[in-house]
Length: 339
Image 1 (cartoon, rainbow, N blue to C red):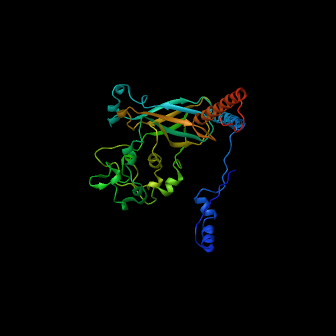
Image 2: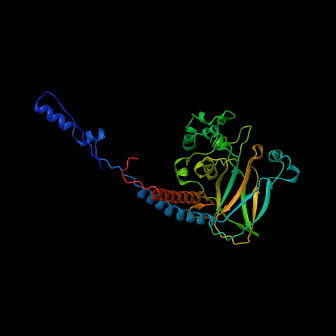
Image 3: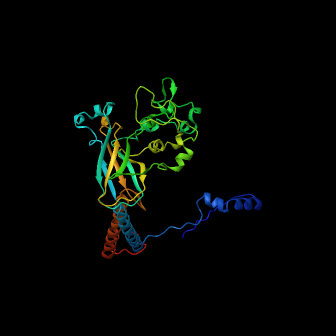
């Protein structure tokens, strides 16, 4: 421990001045400002450094194994449907297929459950090569309008989707305009699987970011239609598909929660997925998948990143501790040596 004290000196003047000066400059506040308070600086010895790395290795490696086991125990089914749902006659021109309103966009596909899936089973849709983090796209919204509705008249931040037919759009902006509008229904054999679509968004978003008395107005009424439409009789706080979509993703490949299946699925069950393939990802080379996944204490879906990060950190710490120990044994250095 090293303690440094503040020192002052005066020349001339009486004892009263000296005492006042000394009192004002000897308190804890003055010593704190002058950085003269007692301080503790650890002295790292080779033994303490080796011990620290050993403890880190013995802690992180088991944690990594536990996280990897939890991730691998998640049962996940991912099915890409954007190609399979295109009719054979449109395989070479998918953009024409998605833009042709006379062609049915409904398709049914079957998937087999390889392992037992315990409820709740989370249903996600996954988009790839969709850049929700584009600067202009992210800025094209107005949070005050989502909360206060048409009372918020300054919606310049929603450019280029602000008005249609001379009237303001609510909700405005590119994010809401491009709302995902594919839909999914599930059945096991001939029995429909109930899909719970309530509480799929964050409670804080429903209660504090989207108005309970704010209703869609003049939405998707322009000359260029983006994505899905909204029920004008349902307030924004209950439009959970919109709330989920408005929380933009940081990466071009992302998943968003669609609903929850609340019954177990047995191994070898065949699940029929009835898909309405409405969303246009063909114009920009995007890909669409539907995901069924169980959850563990780490969350829903498989994600081995955390476990691998723990393992790499733990293994690196162990290797460094062994390397330092060998160096210390081969070339011991006395504590406090100047070199």
